[in-house]
Each structure stands twice: as structure tokens, then as C-alpha cells.
Length: 196
Image (cartoon, rainbow, N blue to C red):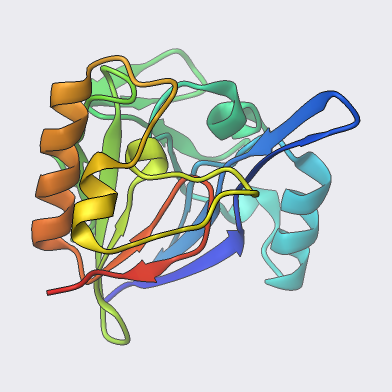
């Protein structure tokens, strides 16, 4: 079974008329593989978090991007040995582009399409011993730092997303995630348990 750990809790806030944002960054370990989901754009915080895990950049095997917004993706290039995965492809630093079959190669970690916030959005399903199925959902669910994180199903389905590309797709993606997940790691905010 895999293990998932939040390295950085994502944030989205305003300070002194400037906006600051970086996504939640999650480390998944399965077997000998080290996988980063959404490296974000706060380089200092990411490097400190990896150092605290005694994990050099070269030891990351895969980086998964839930979608292409820069607050989730900017630091993907610092992992020189990693292949980068998105909702359908596997990208290598030599220019090679391949496809995956909905799983991280060599694992049981699923990558499912969850459009709405972005048309190419995906979420990652990780089966763990401690938490059951953890869904790492990027911005299917996210909160600004000054918002209350209300996580009952009704509020989760209707939670406002000012950057939504397709509201109907987002609602469907949210419903799908709430059906399969025991816990959810949002793009910005705290991990939470799904009401069953």
C-alpha cells in the first residue's frame, strides 16, 4: 500500500495589495517510488519540506500535475530525474511524450479525469492503510486562507470557485470524488474526512 503525506499546505491570500498562492504539495511513496503531486511555486518551502524528509530532488521518480495553473506547476522542472504526468500523458526531459493507462506506472495509484476548474484537470486516488482512499484533488476543492473550510457534502458540491471553466463538469467531478474518497487533500486548505 502507498503512503501519502502533505509536504506543504496550499495557500491563497492577499497581503499588502499583493496576491500570494502556492498549491498543496503531497508526497506519495509506494514501494521504492517517490511521487510529488503539484510541486507549487513556493521554492523555499518546497526545498525545506524535502530536506526534512531527507529526500533529494534527484530521488523523485514522478511529478503529477493536477492541472496547468502556475501556482500548482511552476516548480515541476526542478526534479531532474522525474517523469511528469498529467491527466493522460507521461513527459520526459528528453522530449518524449507517452500515455498512461490511468495509473502511475508500476503502482496502484489512479489518475482520474476531473474537469471543471480546468478542462484538463485530474485527481489522484491513493489507497492507504491509515486513511483508506485519499483523493488528492488539486482545485476540484480549494479555499482562500480567509475562508471557512466547510466540508459537509451539500456545501462542498456548491462551494464557489471564481476560476471555474465549466460549472456542470466541476459539479460532476466533485460528486465523483465524494463517492470514492475517504479523505480529500484540496489544492489550498486542510485535508478533511468525507462524510459517508
